[in-house]
Length: 200
Image 1 (cartoon, rainbow, N blue to C red):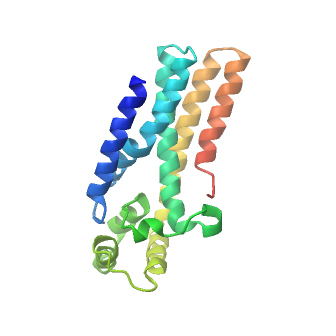
Image 2: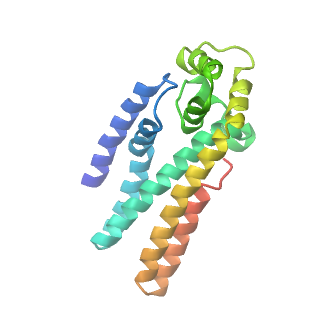
């Protein structure tokens, strides 16, 4: 309960941090990662660690599961943010471009901002910064993200976190030397990789 209560407090902080960067297209990538660590990844980490603790895991098991959950949560959220601009609405189960309409600052837009010229940055200031939207703006945003390979870079970042989570949990479970641990490690590893391979 203490672990989950601490996570709940961190999630609240993450939500406040997200509100603080909303509408600020020049937000540094580190600030975005701090937001999703506190808002999403910490929940995955707390759930994973709590499961290990309740299941009788030792300190090393709990620590590995916490780290696994953090990496899994980062992969999940980065992927979700990338899909908001790249996926088909039918696959997503929500409207594509919701983050854009709500002026959310995510990894794809940060990358496009950093790589963009002054004219492109003026577009991001008008839309994400001032919520001054016009017809065709979402398509233009998607074009800019494509131009700067921002979606690809975000997907790569999601996959990197997923691979780290998968490798760490498989290595830890295999080191225990029993078949049940091997099976659990492989299943958790595959779950992490799926988080960065989904299309919705």
